[in-house]
Amino acid sequence: MEKIDHPDQKKSDNAANYWLSGITAGFLALGIFFVVNSKVNVVARLEIPQVDKKFLDNSPWRQTYADLVKSKEDLSDYDCYSCHDKVKPPLIRYDKNQKIIIPKEHANIEMSHGTHERNNLCYNCHNEQNLNTLQARDGNVVKFDNIPQLCGSCHGPAFRDWEAGAHGRTSGYWDRQLGDINRLSCANCHNPHAPRIPTRESAPGPHTYREATNYENTKSVH
Ligand code: HEC
Ligand code: HEC
Ligand code: HEC
Ligand code: HEC
Image (cartoon, rainbow, N blue to C red; front, top):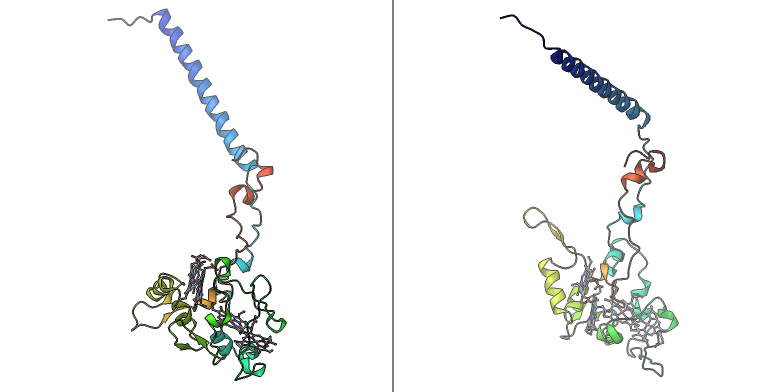
């Protein structure tokens, strides 16, 4: 049978070609646009400022008597009998509001232990009979390098947590055959005279993408 082109068939072929080349041109243009645009918008990386080293330091913020002995620092503050009389323990003085007066020789001491200063009495911790030692609530005499025994005599739960490694950043080895366990003393973190942990300046937040890419100059990149 002879094939006869219908006039309408020709028309529709033309239309299809017209559309196809239109779409091809469109995609080409888009491609060029992307290539060119990607070159224009190479994002300049900005130098990110380093975090201040003080925020990365994780050593305890206080030194205890034991640390001072180890690093051979001045221990004259602990030499109580260079100023005090061995037979006459210093009297505790109060002002008219029953607040303990800190003598100027002890001006470095900020006394504030407990809400309403419940535990400000020096001889709750220091041994009146021998100032060079401390005294726990059960009467046991405790040396200056064994502070947890003293604190533990009043703070049972915190002490037990500490012994179990749940309080006070225990580190070192679980398996004692591999090495020692490392325990910080209560006084590495708590000032015995004012044990509430002071607030600290918070570290800066993480750097954002915008900060790192000079956002102002790259409006089309979000
Ligand atoms: C540089 C000298 C000096 C040293 C060292 C010193 N003290 Fe004192 N202390 C004083 C003076 C001065 C006073 C006020 C007069 C007084 O009470 O004898 C005082 C007062 C005190 C008081 C009475 C506090 C009050 O608020 O009323 C206590 C308790 C005390 N000292 C304990 C100690 C202990 C414990 C040590 C050692 C860990 C020590 N001192 C080391 C000079 C010293
Ligand atoms: C004689 C008992 C006694 C001893 C010893 C003692 N504390 Fe306290 N502590 C108290 C009392 C009482 C409070 C107040 C509790 C309250 O206000 O509810 C307190 C409060 C605290 C607080 C809460 C913060 C605050 O100021 O309210 C911390 C932390 C603390 N003690 C740590 C220590 C450490 C560390 C030691 C050892 C250096 C220690 N305590 C030794 C009795 C004691
Ligand atoms: C909650 C227990 C507690 C109370 C209450 C307390 N101290 Fe202490 N004090 C200690 C401990 C523990 C040390 C050892 C600190 C260390 O090694 O970090 C110490 C250290 C000291 C020292 C030597 C180091 C320094 O900071 O000068 C003096 C002096 C002293 N205390 C005086 C006093 C006086 C005076 C009072 C009363 C106004 C008092 N303390 C109340 C627990 C206490
Ligand atoms: C590594 C640091 C670190 C060590 C070591 C440490 N603590 Fe704490 N402790 C903290 C922090 C942080 C808090 C929670 C902050 C706060 O409440 O002031 C806290 C809270 C406490 C509280 C509760 C305070 C409250 O307001 O309820 C007590 C009591 C206490 N510690 C006692 C001790 C005793 C006793 C020891 C030693 C046996 C000890 N801590 C060792 C860091 C430490």
